[in-house]
Amino acid sequence: MGSRSELISTGLETVERTTLQDQIYRQLRQRIMSGFYLPGQSLSLRSVAEAVGASVMPVRDALRRLETENALVAGHNRALEIPRLDRASLREIGQMRIALEGLAVERAAASIGSDDIETLHRLCSEMDTGIADGDTEAYLTANWAFHSHIYRAAPAEMLLPFIESLWLRMGPWFRVVALDRSHLDRAMIFHGAIVDALARGDVAAAREGVVGDIEAAVCDLEKWLGENGH
Image (cartoon, rainbow, N blue to C red):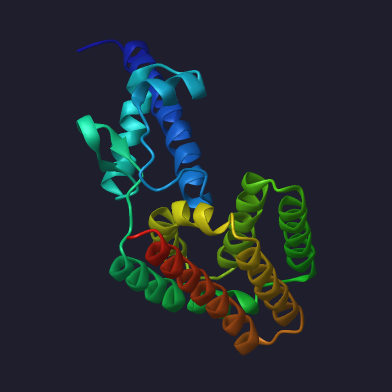
């Protein structure tokens, strides 16, 4: 049996490796949910490793974790890629989002305070700026931050992981509709309505805004799929 100091040293090394892998995993996961990658886009070990400045090993582990969450699938030449969606899957995910996110905003409403409202207004402003500047990534980043800020306020620990699992599947498709100015204009109307409803404590109106936002996104994506032969 090794000495106590050797055991402590070994344990610390394991934690350090796990932390690096976890950082890469969380960064990639966040980007997928936000919509930084397009459906069908390949994420190779080498390209990700170069981007994050790490070796291949922790990147491989991070990608495998994302594959188990169905955020990545095996594509051509066994490379992992962002999954594509068909209309049936899109509708199913949309229905699940309505159920879970509708519940989350209902639960969150009582916990949302003035500081939260200020944060949500700021994120709406960031989305508006992203739209005006044609900065898709800025809009997508603020969009996920907006929704997740609301859902994290819900006193229901099990809800957010389920919601995130759906955004992992649908997030990449947000980038498709984020190129459509009419979609963005409608989304911002819903976002404003959600904040206003939460500010006045109108739970039903807040849920209506979330549901309308989801339904509009699904509708626009279905239209895009039809126009592009999917």
